Length: 188
Picture 1 (tube, helix red, strand yellow):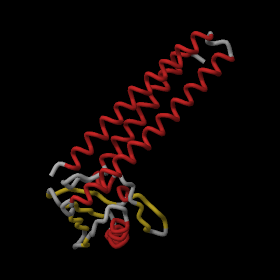
Picture 2 (cartoon, rainbow, N blue to C red; picture 1 turned 30 degrees about the vertical axis):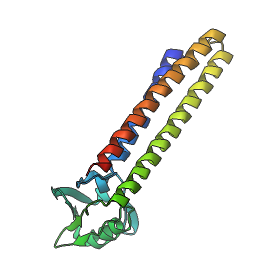
Picture 3 (cartoon, rainbow, N blue to C red; picture 1 turned 30 degrees about the horizontal axis):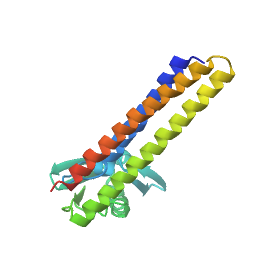
Picture 4 (cartoon, rainbow, N blue to C red; picture 1 turned 90 degrees about the horizontal axis):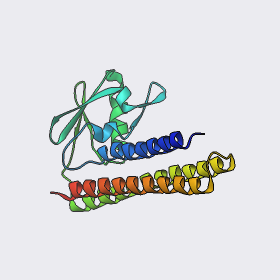
């Protein structure tokens, strides 16, 4: 067990926590329509006797600022996709057209904006929990390296301090991302 290699793995894991949060924030809508709104939510569609992700069954476009269109690869799945979008947690009301589904994106009310801010805070807290789990794994690795004589007592303390510094850096990144997303949501 190389301490430098372990530290790089820990930093990579923390970076992935932040990247995942950015991915999650893309699904939290602001005032404009974005395919990521329903694409990143992993909307599950019951079609062909199985459950599939929406993006594996259709193409999602944003032809207008307040409209998404979903074009199923197979028109037979249109009703199933429409039902799945209606039942997802966004409160959207899709309407099936000829060979596509139109999903109007309503204007966000003040109440809905506040709900979205709560959701952003919740997603930020989940990211911090994942970050703390990575930190705990790093601290456990430090103890194991000390027990296996890869690190001295002082080396273990230095290693743990580096892990703590990384944790604080990535926690600040998460907080900054959450504040920026909240500001974006509250902007009318």
